[in-house]
Image (tube, rainbow, N blue to C red):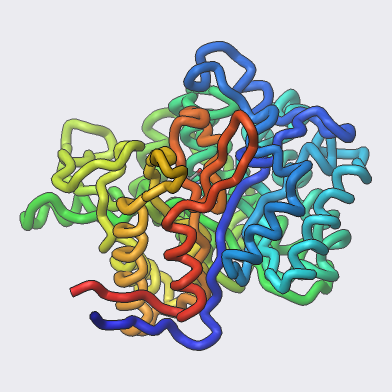
Length: 449
Ligand code: IFM
């Protein structure tokens, strides 16, 4: 067996998000977010579930931090619920909400776990949605103010900040397919949401620099590693289009390359132009310190001239995981290689990578999630290869610490290395948790050959 050693100083962690774990949705003067509104509407979430209680992390954060310490985590990525600290998303500040994040950060630091804070993981305050949400340009300004507040309050202890999590998901699934909050289906609103979300990112980066706080700031995109379904030249062109409409749409502006021409033309042809104003592209391109990479799978792409976008996803050829993703462990290394080359080898943190494996406790109570372990191992082997080839990857956050509220799927889809019994709120580390602890302890992974 070969052992693949990661570079010295490489950090290992886990990630979560506020609405997926906190619960306490109406406690301590928290305002409502679009996910409270959306999940309380019949028909939006499987089995009518919602995040009212979720993992009850708001009350159990101390135990959860203890669990992280037992697992050996070196860093923990969580998100702040904007409406907990600013109930309407603007104006009044909720000191009780801020105090929760103060306590959480202090508890992490006591255990020597570095906090990495995501400012926005999809839970827009309902007060801002009532004013138009991401379709309204002012939301970007309000986000800049909220970011400044967080830098002021936590920036003495938090030095790693992520502006937005996966803007492609909350803009397109929230405003084009309607599968996520706020449940809108309108391409004109989707185009506005995309541009304003990226502008919000730029405003937050500017606020961070203005705050004078020490530390680093970046953005986290959702990614898929695109592969040609065959070796025809037109198939490779289709892959490039898929990258335009997904990867380059959200990375290009941040790295100063602007929106891909193919994407601008498509949205304009639909009567949905991006509402770009003077100075916006410069603001969005404010230099970042790192790129957050989330990756779960690959997609095979084939040409589709009859579709406006010119490509489509070809039939999967690998086994499918419960959420429909192909089990493609090579995808992480492949994507990291691609993004590193495309954007000049930025510093990268893998801010999410994980596996949905819904294994339940066996008769002895143990949870043998071997599918997760095998795939995680494969992802890490690929990542190690990309680092060996020169990619500047410094940290890896597994999604997720705990089984949690998986958005429209409710609690059915389990991504945790720790099992959550949602009846009792018991936390039971799975086999993958022990495996991951060993990866951390040895700073590397066994290559089973
Ligand atoms: O649970 C989500 C997370 O909120 C964003 N990235 C993907 C995860 C798994 O689907």
